[in-house]
Image (cartoon, rainbow, N blue to C red; front, side, top):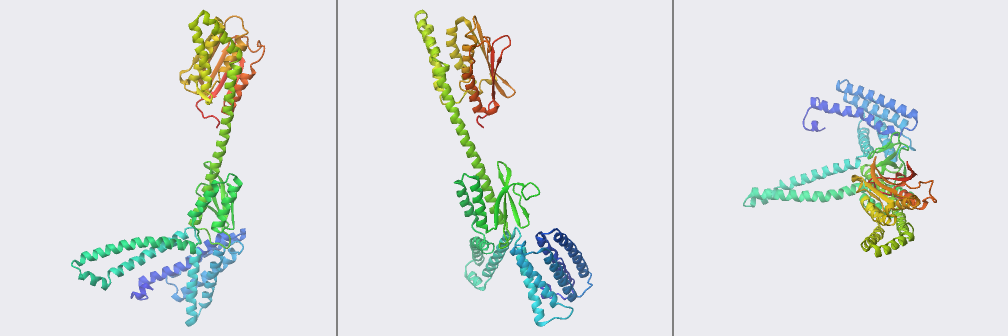
Length: 564
């Protein structure tokens, strides 16, 4: 029409190319409509028939396009041929694929209108000349078909952005036209020519108008966008909805209630017929990937990541009374799916923190009890009584040594009190405590006790549970070396082995079989504390030593966080 209006003759090559493109598009038009209808074929035979119809539509379109470009038919014949082809193909496609039960209303109604408009146009364009009222009716039916086609294709995923940018371009064009009209109006030129410097005044007015229009288009564009989303796509304020949902989820600590809140928010905000959170993989032939969207038979699956992997999926169904989901709707669903995943992660962290705090409380209680036992039982009244008697005897015989022993005894109790709130200490501090403790014991045993302590240099800074070695050393002295006549040897070593810290206490005393009572309390205390700190990653083993005596070996993971 533009070419003819510009004065080109009807038989011009440019007009022929434009008309050929028009009829080629009309011939291929049914293929696009069938592609929209294909997902709504429910039964296997319907799907097979729809695919066969698509192939036939492609063949017929190729045939018509060949007739068009080879100029085999007149314009009237081409109009009737393309109309009848589209009407027959789409009527068959509607019968095969469209069922009111499975087809959304936003697809079903425009599709029926397209088929009705094409059928009416085809009936009017029978092999006879139609004019007057019938010709006008046929033209209006074509316009109706085009409008319904736009409504049908406007429901694709990026429809909101497509329409949004189209309106933005339209606004820019209107503003540009208004600017051109203002700057070229006779009144504007009269004002400009009256100035002392017309060109400068005109440039100033142009710059001022451009800036004013740029500012105003940004102001209008935002409101037009909100109006279109609210009126055409019925979209709520998703940012506000997301914030409100996040605030509600923060107050929930039950997984079922969290899922129900997310499902309710999706249904209410988007007017969905169904929204359900399920385990990942249900209803999808392949595992979902993060950010992926899967559509099937009118339903949409949105993956949900928790703990760094896809564990759930949000399944939503728009329903027959709601238009299809567009990009802003899907972005909102992604946002609430992310909120669900974040809340589940936070809930897991909260539970871990509570469990960790509970374990820490148990640990602190055990440490306190161990410290009290060190004061009352392990460093028992006999030890204190004997130490004080030794001090009293030394005061007469060797006052300097008595003072040294008193200081060592004070150092032992000071260490216990200083570590009352510390579940862990370094190997170096633990060995320093044992030295002070053994110095007192050496004063009691005299020449009968020989102590050897060996600590690997790389293990000195590693952390171990406080007072972990003292019960083992006391057991060795009391039950192994105490009953043994003559001299005894006590060996304490700390080494590293395959990522583990090895603490070993050995004596050449009477051995396990020669002991009157087994050291169950101290060893049980050590085992219980190691289990609380490291679960199954630590161990303690008591065994007979080659050549006589007893060996206790403790294995602890090196430099790992406890209570994980």
